[in-house]
Length: 99
Image (cartoon, rainbow, N blue to C red; front, side, top):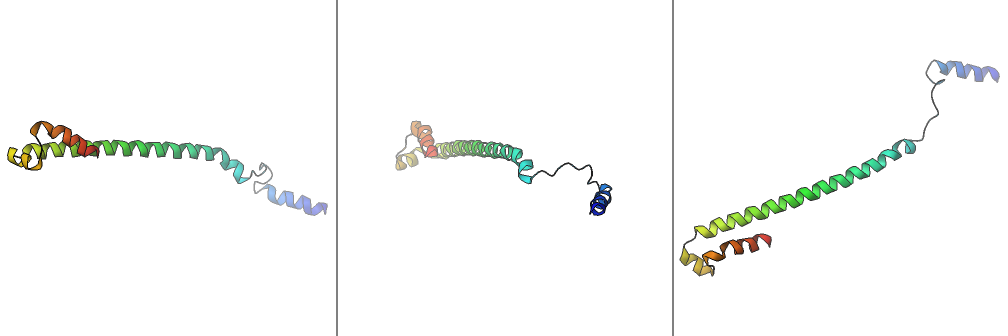
């Protein structure tokens, strides 16, 4: 029995097993990075949310400007047909863009 144990140690010593530290369970290796992953997800969610808010604001601004431009291009009798006075165009466009 001693020979086999000795033989096993010698056979595996050249393969790098003699100085190999004890194996660490996968969970213990990954666990510290799990929390980093949660922070990355939180940051990613916040970045997507901020990007979404900026995109919506730009779209509202664009719609407001396009509405103002279109209404100002109309002749007075057409504005009368839809019940809008020229001085109301900016406020009306802002209300329409903000929904």
